[in-house]
Amino acid sequence: MAAKKILLVEDEVTLTTRWAEALEAEGYDVFTALDGDAGWKMARGDSFDLILLDIMLPGLDGLSLCRMIRNDSASADVPIIMLTARGAEVDKIVGLESGADDYMVKPIGIGELLARVRVQMRRPPPDRGLNQDELTSGDLRLDLTARRIFRAGEEIKLSNKEFDLLTLFMRNQNAVLSRDFILTNVWGHDYFPMDKRTVDVHIRWLREKIEDNPSSPKRISTVRGVGYRFEG
Ligand code: CA
Image 1 (cartoon, rainbow, N blue to C red):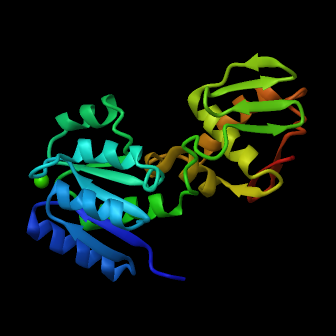
Image 2 (cartoon, rainbow, N blue to C red):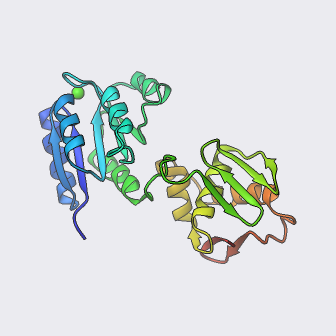
């Protein structure tokens, strides 16, 4: 398999060098850009599996660059991790809906950086509404664009995590999903300090909403010792 390609856009040369070395040691192909304009040229000119993007850059800033990458159909799906010097910028990353998948606040340890990169690399290609806007199974219909779910035409109210969980199941019908797989895909890096029973609790809630008889579930089965399976 070809090495996964990472674009690192960061103007602090010492950081760029250190991170590039650490990522290359993990087997990734790393490309670097020291300012926003160079980063944009590279992001447009090649396809990457992940982009690490500093916010404070000379020229084009990281948030603008992030939105430009998201709005360009050739690069719209690439996972982006934003790197920020100040916690205050986190509000901007989230509030402005820059389109970033994750963010890290400096100083960033190499171990943490590699862990976050691995999480993004393991995620299935995100569906940003470009390919599919609806998932169905039996009388369940998930509208991915509006994030609404209908059962036999009647809308069911789900929390965000329940919706993400059901989306993951309906994309992987009849496959056994382990708790780790579910945690990584639904909770992402947030799961590290979290208990695996979180999955069980959310599944119990979800069953109460989509099963005829939640104590004898027909749609989401428990696979003992492994995880869960959505019966398609
Ligand atoms: Ca910077």
